[in-house]
Length: 411
Image (tube, rainbow, N blue to C red):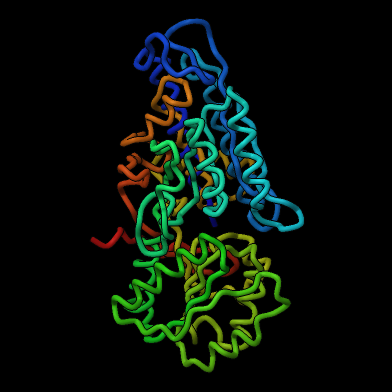
């Protein structure tokens, strides 16, 4: 249910251009790629999105692109002296039905070579970001993600890997930020929710072996151990397996009364959920929490609505129905034209607002930037994470995700 971050991301990029348009960034001889200095003739710059447009994420990523186009249309594709061009890129392949390593790397090289590109709205998947950001960093090309949550992209914490995050920024200057809460917070909140709210005493942890899924599962495991929630086991599942009956039989034998699933549903998550219910028990008997990569409308089709009924899911986004006035109005337009908004859609439109219209200017503006967006004010901390960190808890009910409550990051 990744719905609302597209708009938030776009607004930040727009404000990056707006400063020069207002005469705040100019000056002679500043950054050159795609930009201009001060109030001369109108200039055209380009932003691109980098999202998986094939596989189970396609419906929500297509909606993110539609929302971006709608927002740009509403502002006449103009910010001050700048005309904004937008192009959507696909980082997935039909064969994988998900993001693809070679495609991600090739996309980043295309953006670097096209000097009219001053900002990238992406990526959607953290593993893809880990490949693209270092390539773009050499050219000071800014990325702002509406959905990446892997800890190590921005800081050291539970679930981060050796050498992170420095290895993604070879030129020494950060060119990446995200408008959503990272997975170390998600792991903490989910572990506490499972123990305190759901009454689970022993949990079995699963991950999809992808960068994001493994990271959020590791963060959950660390938090569970810290609060005295027993961990019965932690395993990765094979996305290419026909079924998970043997894995679920093992989980049942472990005596776990809860399961945490970290990953992306397009990696055969529907079959995983089906086999969990069939062998371990329904979602009232053995409580299950899935990470935000599963909180998508497509899961009800992949697993069957009856199998998702009662499952809990977390996502680092506001409930779409609780967005402030501007966000609610924009989501109403999205719904009228493109269907019910997914949770990350509005967030994908909030990232253009503070620079001099050059690559370097946009990148510089990310440090400590603040913008009023459709999801409310967002300020980046020194790492490129939003200062206000939270998770929303949803539950599968009647074939859709119902918002339950929201938790701020533990102090």
